[in-house]
Each structure stands twice: as C-alpha cells, then as structure tokens.
Length: 156
Image (tube, rainbow, N blue to C red; front, side, top):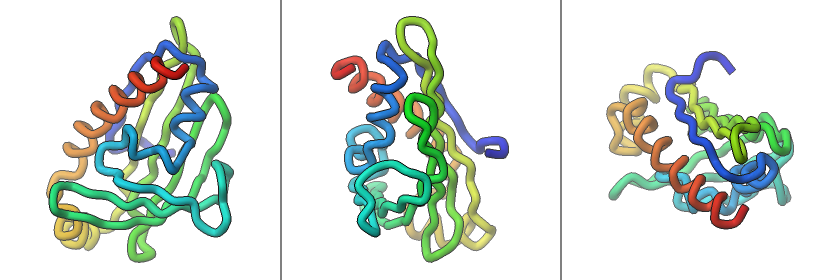
C-alpha cells in the first residue's frame, strides 16, 4: 500500500491469530468499526480470502451509505486488508497489520483515501455528512482500535 492517509496502532494482550480472527470476521466488524452498521459477505463468500467481496452499510448520524469491499490481503495472524468502492468508483483501502509485540501483538489500522475529486469534494460529503474525512477517520481509528483491544483481551 502506498502511504496511508491515516493510521493508528495499539498493543493488544492477545495472540496475533486471535486478533486476526476478529478483524477478518466481516459480519462482526460493526462491533468495533465506528461508522459500520452491518457487513455481509457477497457472492457465496463465507470468510476472508483474497477476492472475496462484502457489502458494508455505514452510518454517521442521520447519513447512511453503502459500499462494496474486496479483500486484497488475508494472511492469518498478520494482515487483513480490503479495497472499498461506491458507485463503482474507488473509495479507500483499509488495512489491519498485526505483529507480535510484548505480551501479545501490535495492531495497526490504516486507511488510504482513493477517492477522486468528485467523490472527495461533492458526493462523499453529501452522502456521509463528513467534509474532513481524514480527521473523522483519525478519530474513528482511535475508537475502533480501543474497541478491538477490549474485545480481543476479553475473548483472547
């Protein structure tokens, strides 16, 4: 991935494989991903594998929108990543990188904004109510990682 637009990291007292299982369990992503309300595998997919697709339904206050994501990395215990589109146009690339650290692992969540000018300046803000996507993603990544950490340490 080229340089991420926004990223954040947290140390988690859980095994890398356990954390990977959480971040790659697409139907359960809304448990910690802040704007995500629902995710469903598409095309008969039942789990993370490169090329599998899922629909994400998202919400920011009264604003709701839907995206399609395609898994681009599914390396158990190390990495889960997906590329997001809306209206058939590139939106973002999300990654969870996991590496052993301390009593468990370090998880880095990052996003790279792939939107063109029209999506970035007009369609995106009107659909999501977010004019400064980088700042909102920065806050959301912090909250998402805190939720992920709490869940992983509770179950892992």
